Image 1 (cartoon, rainbow over the protein chains, first blue to last red):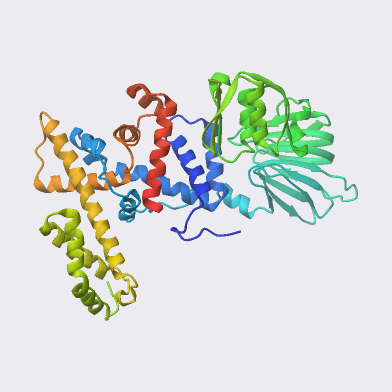
Image 2: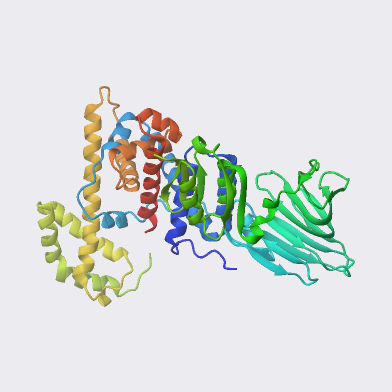
Length: 330
Length: 169
């Protein structure tokens, strides 16, 4: 893990461009809670993300500190109408490098997701998927943007899913210690099992899908365990477990590297796809209610985009490589 | 500020050797000699303030010209701001009477903000100020200016990129 560098060390252009895309969106006054959450995740995914973000966050402050002076008609008009003299722009810019350096670089919270991710025993970045075999032979698959802690002790095998999505295959029958997965909402106890756990952002709960065996689920704020049998899936919040319904095979298609859509709303599909995409990926509400069906390979998102454009009356609007909107075909 | 003892003498030598050249160089660009002389002085003040070891300069002329050019550009930009301010003032029916000091401070502020917005045309500046000073959403700005939200968003994105570049690149 690398620590944040000095404040003024260079930031990669790709990170800068992502930050600009995010910042522009954040300033729109029109951000959805999910986008807000995705932004938090992006900021916390790497120290340089946050650093680039803070550089941009200083810009509005520089104006607001001067708002009293600037908010007269004369000042506004002067500012709007100032024409640059003809001179090399680079030199102009360099001349003002000293202006208004930014002080606000503090981390938003001590246990940021970035820190959680970087310090977690196992973690994946955006679009990454990994497979690990743990000490007892239990196999885990980590989906995109996932952080997992493994805390095995003499009395239990505890996995803490801090964020993201995890699939577990437990085949070790001789190990008598309970195998437990903790999420923000629930404690899940494996009973000879293969199951998938997804910790949804934004307080949307934990999704549990059981492929074989059983899982005993106990919401953190409730005392009672509920058994979820093989072939069922459910959503759990901290107070309760929703009635289970039959397992949707597409839930675990990510393990094989696919998103499977069966008459899926385009809006939902894009939201799902955005988990695997670095940057901002939005769906224009005008096309969000189109439906699509198919298997889409996660290792080639560009190919998915091409498929969408071919099969639906949509087109991709690319402001930058990090800001893509799926919208009506012109 | 502490600096090596030897530095002022280096600067002195530099001054003696190149002051005439620098004034000429500036006169060619400014036309009037009083301004050119002022800027030449300012250039050497900058040299003293920088901790650059003058005796190690391999291209002293280029070094001086770079600093002088920076000052020149600042001056042009300030003049552009002052001109725009004077025009805005003239266009205002009931102009507020600002004291000389207030006016000076306002121009300072305008120069600073102008530097931040450099490279943006009048329309992009208007969009930027509506968002950042007035707190309008992109949708509201689009309605007010008769643009699409997409155009507003693109303009803001460009503005932030330029602001970023002006401070960090």
